[in-house]
Each structure stands twice: as C-alpha cells, then as structure tokens.
Image (tube, rainbow, N blue to C red):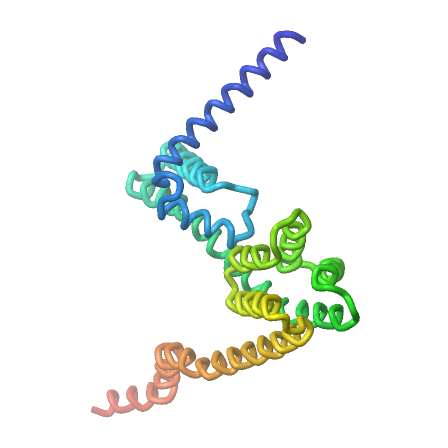
Length: 254
C-alpha cells in the first residue's frame, strides 16, 4: 500500500506543478493582472456567470490545452499542415465563441425574467415586507440566472455590504440595461426616501413598455431582412419557371 500512496502523491505533485506552469504561461499571455486584456476577460467571465468558477488565467489554460490537444490530434491523423493550423486556430477561438454565446443566452434569460420578478417584488413590498425580505421571498419563488444574482446580492447585504454597493454589483455582474435602470432607480429612491413600492411598479411598467417597443422595432426590420433572400433566392427561381418556356420557344423559333 505504501508504494501506491507514494505514486499517488507523486502524481498529485506533478499535476500541481503542471497546473502552476500553465497558469504562469497564461499570466504571460493575458498581459498581467489589472491590464486591459485581463480585465476584459474577467468581465466576460463575470457576465457569463463565471462558468466552472474559472479565473482568467484558468480560462487561458483551458484554451491552451484544447489547442495543444487539437495540434497533437492533427499531427497523429493524416492531415496536412495547413489544415492543422486552421484546426488549431479554430480550437483557440471556440472557447471565446462559447463564452460570448453564454453571455447572450444569460442576458436574454435575465431580460425576460425582469418584469415578472419586479411584479413579485412590488406585491411583496406593498404587502408590508421590507426590500430585503421581499427579495428573499422572490428568490424562493423564482428560478434562473436573475434569481441566482438576487440571491448573491442578498447574501452580500446580509454580510454587511451596503445596499447600494450590492445593487451596483448586481448590475455589473449582469450587464443588462433594464436591470441597470432598475438599480439606479432603487438607489435614488433609497437616498431620497421615496416609496420603494411605487418605484418598483413604475420600473416594471417602464420595462414592459421598452420591451414592447423593442419588439415593434424588430418587427419593422423583418421586411428589410427578408428582402435579400427574397431577391437572391426566390425571384430567380420564379423567373426561370415563368420565363424559361418562353425563352426556349423563342430560341427554337429563331
């Protein structure tokens, strides 16, 4: 049993050294902490909900690992050098594309959930609950990314962070414009002593109005977006069907 334990210990030590080495390499590639590249990647991971609790260096390590495995696989398989380079480049970009898709999907889910969550908050506050208690009640009923962020905000307030700071952190972690407006309104209401329930109701109605206007704007853009496939795909086929027999008859006659 002792040799097995020693081998496990050596394997763990080797894995730890490899991870530290890759992390140092990733730190060099991300330009140092507090640099623009590091901060941008950190912001993207935050907006994506911190998938896998990855830090910027660990995300770069993941990209390096995927690219290295793709390179090794391309060398093993009968693939040309040009294709290997293309595959490595694609594998390097895939994690970034996944991160962007994760951000869009998460922000869309938050945007769709905001009006219903604000309605629940409004009803809870008007029923006599304080803002913190109303948020706790909403967390029990709601699900999804917005509920998770509200749960994190409530935790920050319970450990002593000021409400306005917890609300600002909520806005920064989501990057949703509707939620930023809501946070700004709640902070101003808290500072000026305005009724929270009134602010919540106004914000809920305003967000629904903005979403309706956005839907109408997208609907007005639909005919323009349909014009290209209509002209490029449907009209040529239609012209061939309608004019094809006449052209053939004309060519046979002359």
